[in-house]
Image 1 (cartoon, rainbow, N blue to C red):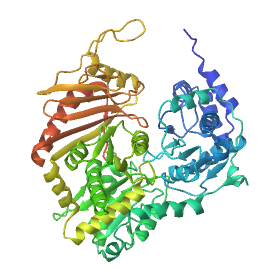
Image 2 (image 1 turned 180 degrees about the vertical axis):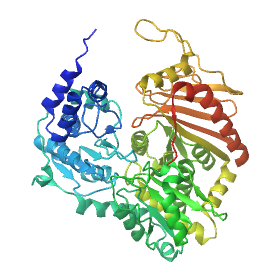
Image 3 (image 1 turned 180 degrees about the horizontal axis):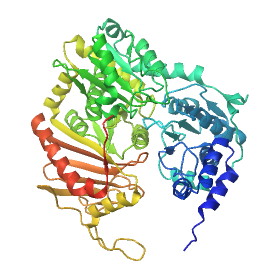
Length: 600
């Protein structure tokens, strides 16, 4: 058994490596104060590099986001790319960053590492929305891309998102290979805050931003009608980088200018008006946008998350109530609109495909089956959706749309990733058409329910910071309250999943952590297995499907539940009842000390 390294030795190692006076001071102060618990939290474990890259709070420590851990990640990534991507040095790397605290420094330090190895560096010196990085990788045929952003996380966090040479987020086994290369190269080679002034670095903004919008223009099919539209649209950037891009897409689509939510459209790393800078959190996050819309007499509100790769929409009803559409509802409307536009262009839909994540609504599968087009689901995350789209294209398919319920939408092949700006222009075009015909967005959605069936979702999460608690919860689902294990910690009997959730019988269970699917003769699931992440899906006899999983970027246990029924009321009532039974029976929030989702 390995001897545990004293925490003072880990602190000395940090001070040996770190050259940032602010983060050095943090560790020195903790040492002087003998704050062992905080030193353990920050230094004992290394920040984990996975398919989501890195994401953590910005402060000193091996388990946090800071100059040192960004340099270490960049060194490992650089060497891995040089080893595995042909002509990587000449093809180069694309680097972008958002407006968060330290994002600019992290981008500069990352660029410095690649430049030190003679790699061509394309770095956006100004703020960009995340899709500009995969677009840059695609357009420049770069070897990889890096976006410094924590997306919609709280202000204390930052992140490091990696794109492979195919302009998609990385998938296994690259994450493990990069993680090992990071571990093998922890001593900094270079610590360069001035890399953006290096004459060998190229800023591709003037070339690529216009090129990006030229491709987005392909989604504009009704510019004259857009220009004539009297529909008013209010927009919030959620204190992020989206507003310049949103204004540009509106102008190019022919619309009258967006009405900005003035308190939230300028980049502000403090996110002063929202507890969580995530439009998915609910109406509270959009309260100021609703206020701006009421004052302007507008009936539609659009929002991007801070790095503008996500998009959502809300509509004011005749009652005066604002309805915030779910990611599944928006995704279904996008998909049906995309298929209508495809067919209206005269193209054959013999090889048309749509994609969604496995925790998204089954309504898209019903649409695809009814309309005779190809549908597939993937593991959660656009790394899987984007890579599967590329594979299907190689097989001759036209992947016209993909989405995940967490308000991420992929329109066409501009980027094989979610893009809140192309989504904004495209949905505005749909809304303008509906309003011209005297139809509200909610009416259009209801028409789709009537055609394809009513689907009601109950998606939420609990916060849990203790991995031991998370593992106990999921293993109780698998093996019961008193699981037996051998001396290695492995469970010695087959899974014994619950037979009922409340009064509803369980028909099948798919466990993508263990790699077990009770619906398959051989017990092997069709989707990829990931032992490092918890994910179990229950299929009930009444047709309800729900998935419980851990988040790769936040301390959350998430769940996604859906029921289909003959009426909206029936589906919604059934979903709420099963959600309650599921939470009480499987998650036991009070007993396990889980924190309920907070109102934004």
